[in-house]
Image (cartoon, rainbow, N blue to C red; front, side):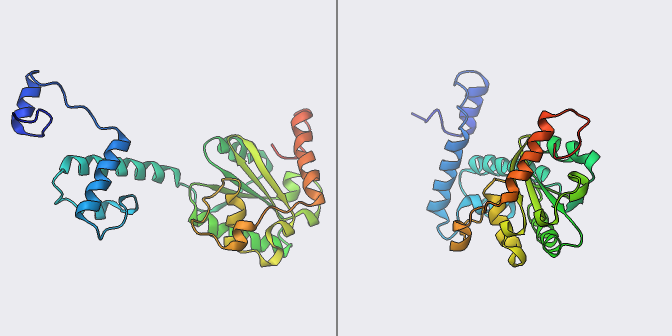
Length: 245
């Protein structure tokens, strides 16, 4: 007896006439498992399927089960389109205090936002801007902005900059105060990435160096002061425009 689940023209006719029940749809995890098993069996020299782009998937069209291949290709295309829609930034945007709620607090409901409080004449701030520009270009799904520190918090001390604020889900996740947090003038885009990754703002490196894995945000006496400024703004009236939002 013919297999009623086989993909044959005759079975398709029987299904169309209601003689055979519709074929069950494979779940995403079952589809991926079936496809990966097929690739491993027939294409042992290829890398894991999850690392392949659409062009590489096209090279596998000689596999017998074209339906699985096409469904998997469609799934990967949807994933790539969704990721491309998120990767819409790519630079460090200059903002002013009136922009803060829209550009930071509200925007962080959709993506992570990294805010640099800086002063132009501080060397560590200039280095931080260069590192952030490199990371912004690399991680376009994360929004990077900067604001002159005194415009965000009046009379913000020079010793407190550079300061980084990490926002996500509409709320502040971290505030890192002072150059020592980032290694001073030894700061690099790589070391900065390792710090931001701890708060989910950017992906962590798959194979991190020992120094990066052991690196933890350093506490300073100024961090509590910056946090207090943030808390004061939340508790006081709207006419008090001292700190973050």
